[in-house]
Length: 208
Image (cartoon, rainbow, N blue to C red; front, side, top):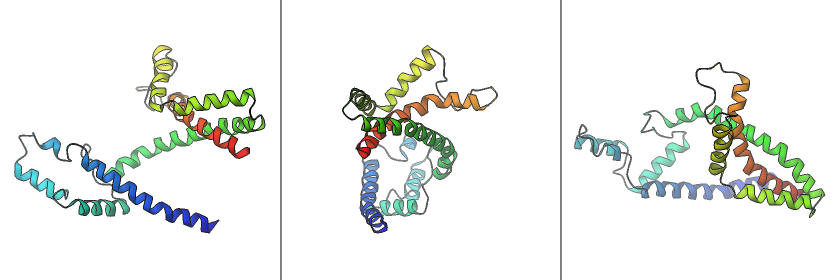
């Protein structure tokens, strides 16, 4: 088992390197550059723009830029945000708690639904129930998450007014557990929908 895990880990290394190269090239092929926002700014002199290009290493060959980027990335240096003028790592840490809360909660909800349904579909394979659940999972996998989220917001938040449409808590109101739960319902359900569809099929196949 340890040998298999080690082999899979080693096989993932060239894939990871390939992903970083493709991501790096896509960013460079995209229109504009990190200093594009300053091109038409009359308050910034040409010499200042040249200094910015040198400071960011944009005058270096592409392979040198990639090596510096991947070296900094390996050391946990994600660079500085051009919009916030803050280290990207700090911005990520600020948002990590909410990201973990959404991820863990949606995963727990997906498992609570998918495991019993997957087992039931395996026990009653090829029955009407199995066919019905399989059809629903196919729809769940096919639905784009952003579209489903907007649809749920329009219905439950805008039309019915039952749930908030965004945020972590009600503005200018005392923060409480129930208020936080209400704000989590729509995003957690949206994320869990696609996960439920995938895991039901996986559990069913594994049981069979």
